[in-house]
Image (tube, rainbow, N blue to C red; front, side, top):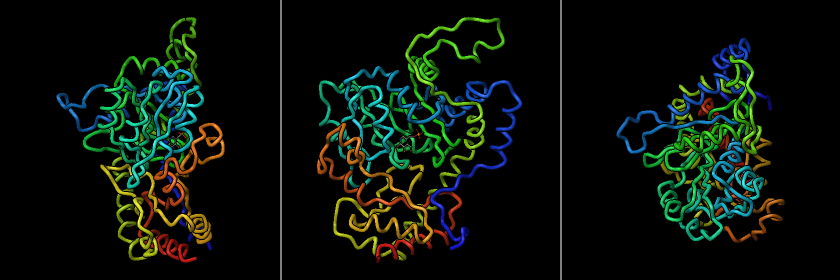
Amino acid sequence: MSAADRVEFFKHTLGEEEAASWRQVLETVFLTLGPQVATFEKELGAFLLRGRSEGDALFGARHVVGTNSCTNGLMVALRALGLEPGDEVITTPMTFVSTTNAILHLGGKPVLVDVDPRTGLIDPANVRAAIGPRTRGILPVHLFGQLADMRALRDLADRHGLWLLEDSAHGTEMERDGVRPGDLGDAAVFSFYATKTLTSGDGGAVVTKRADLAERMRQLRNHGVSKAATERHGSLYQHWDMVDLGFKANLTDLDAAILRPQLPRALDQRAAREAVDLRYRALLPELAPSLFRQATSQVPPLAERVGQSTHHLFTVHVPAAQRDAALTALGARGVGVAVNYRAIHTLSYLVKVLGIPRGALPHAEEIGDRTISLPQYPALTEEQQARVARALEESLAC
Ligand SMILES: Cc1ncc(COP(=O)(O)O)c(C=O)c1O
């Protein structure tokens, strides 16, 4: 098979605009924590408020703090929210390990609750049942770009005096019942990792409506020092102080310069991914009928959509007994695939640390055992999608 026949799992859309923006930074003094970072933070804040005006319920300042990853953004946010060793955080097993890694690194205890089998999103009823005396916060994940039920979660958080932190690694462009990331959470954290809907290879950002939290996070992302080098530049020497135990977690100007040109086209890119999603939903019943011949289960062959997704990923649920062979067969047919995710409490380290037995979180486990992520990006053609669907059918027939 020639390289041209391969259907890559992901292809970014970065080009000349990003290259030109990046080159401009090379001609300036500041490569990091400089004006590009500050401007990107303002632009992302404005993007999150797009179309709203004063008087709208969810209008108001959005403070954005650029970080070098979502993982480190989560740690910065958790520290700023006051997570202490032994504190419990309720979250989901249907996520990437960084969600729980961030909690564990700070000495917190992730309490995993099961997901809605139709969407894979954290189920607020299970969150309610898990709230106990050591619970300090709730950390939902907006899986594949679909917002969790933030109204229900905010209500629970308020009634129990908890904070609410959103893992929004799967995009900035989502909305559900008029709610966007950062609207109802104390903070939401984005990822700009290589395959994400906005990308600088690696990178992240935290958005919050709370000025106090933003100020603390700005210090925490930069070792906990009182003034960054850029703030001290231009005046005579001033000492800086270390006022908090922080992290090395800031976004760089080079990364911000690559991110900025992507924001104005983010909604068009979302529409292009949505078209890919709809085409799969039309093509698969015809070209991969085996996918739909499954034992009845609450986990449907295609996850249900709620609200406006970013369409970061497109997943199918195949019979568990065939999943791993299908991954190999798809790869052998030149189709790039991934698994997002095996339920994280089944992974070796987390089995040791969390000790959650198989069977305890059955919906997440079933999704994790059955899921396959297919190629999903704006440049994917209908012909390529048909090839993916046929390869899936052949793989399930193996
Ligand atoms: C749900 C989720 N949370 C967090 C992360 C971590 O993102 P980053 O690589 O920017 O740290 C990812 C990355 O894949 C993710 O999918």
